[in-house]
Each structure stands twice: as C-alpha cells, then as structure tokens.
Amino acid sequence: MTTTTALKGPEGLCRSYGQAMLDKDGRAIAGHYLFPYISFTLGHVHSFEDRATADAACTDQVARFGRSGVGTDIRLIDYKIVPVSEDAALCHLTWEVYPVNGTPGWSWTNVYGYRRKGEEEGFEFNVSDNEIGELLKRFPDFYSL
Image (cartoon, rainbow, N blue to C red; front, side, top):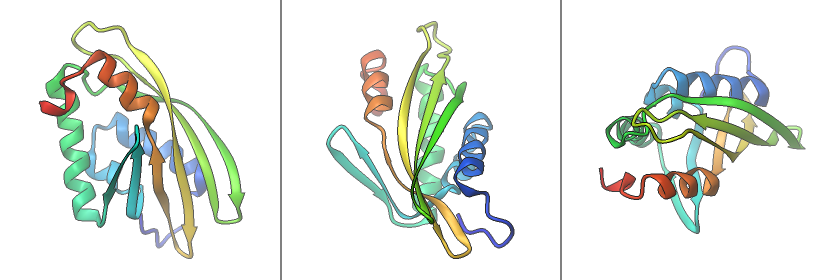
C-alpha cells in the first residue's frame, strides 16, 4: 500500500483492513499489502507478485465467500500488535464470520507481518492456518466453487 500522506502505523492499518473486509472490497483488501506479498497456509506458500494480481485474487476470494454460503459478514473483532523493530510488527488479527447458510459462526486469528518502508507501509506476509483450517472443516469444497 503506497501512502503519500500520513502513515497509519500498524494499529491504523489493522483497523483499515478490517473495514475493507466489512466493505467486501477485494481491491481495498489488496491495497493493504506490500509486494511481493506472501501467504503461508497449512504448509503451502502462495504469493502476489504485484498489485494487479492481488486485486484479482482478493476480489475472487470475496466472491467465493458469497458463492460458497460462507457469506461476506466477516468482522475484525480484535487485534494485538507485537513490535519487532522500529519499522516492523507482528499483527495478530482475530476475525469472526457469520455464514449466510445457517452454519454457526466461528472466529480465528491470523498473523500478519507489518512493514514500513519509507513512505510505504502494509502487510508483507500472513500466516492463515487457523482461518483456512476452520473454513475447510465447515466448507470442504470451498476452493472448488
């Protein structure tokens, strides 16, 4: 996320990311990433090399949540910032989802790596084992939809 005005810092970025999720806006979600952005999930590694790739993937993921019955009522309910250095932090974001198909809601925590590089800031990686593990328990065909 390139910022030419005031930087948000890790707390502001976490709150803004939560709002982008509430807004169901894949491009706004992708706007919180630095590139290359790397996602570690259940032993797999995925990356977005650039903003265009992230925009497309995040927009598709929001649509998949809708198609699958999970729905898009996904809320940031808490976060904890653990400083690593002056320009980096680990952000533990706790999310809650309320599926539209009647499946009981659940919560999970992902870890995001915050980085400030001069006038840029964003998440450069995440670990989403909890999110995807819990999602696939309830929606095993999620990625085939």
